[in-house]
Amino acid sequence: MALTMDDVWTILARDFGNYVSDGGVTPITFPFDNGYTPISGDVVFHTLVNDPDLQPGINANLRTRGKNPDIYDCDDYAITAKAKISSKGFADSNNVISLDSPYCVGVIVTINHIVNFSIDAAGNVWIIDFLYGVFYNFTQQGNQSAAWLYGGSVKLIFV
Image 1 (tube, rainbow, N blue to C red):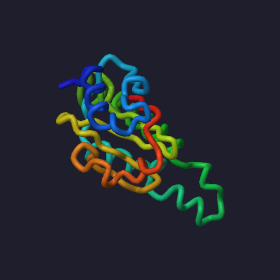
Image 2: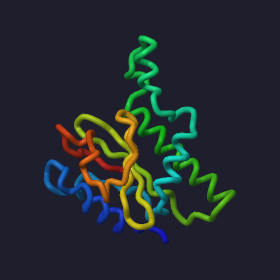
Image 3: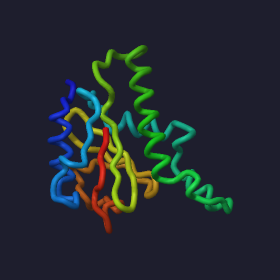
Image 4: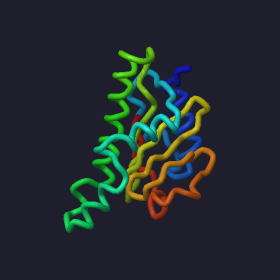
């Protein structure tokens, strides 16, 4: 079942409305497509963890080698991860399954950090947080695992 733009708006407002500085998600949420294909957290996790460009610890590896960790940090990871899942959707639509719309994977920008998210068929929002090395169901766990939200509010969400 595809998610409409209205579905995505409603889910994001439900889960992140309290974390937006102006109290509402609408002004800063951008679903760019007409609809989205839900994608399970497991598929997102396995796609990213098995990709050499997205291995956990890349940033820490730069630090231990005395390199500047800004070379590949949260913003670089989030954009790369979004692109990799979009690319997977394109490949899946040609090879495995017929997608009517892109996978529902996006980026959340806060004042201090950037993370990825996906939305599954049950309407759960999954967070992929490169810097803290966590992957969890935000809809069910809320902000108890959301170190990326502390000290800042959501500034932009795009899908």
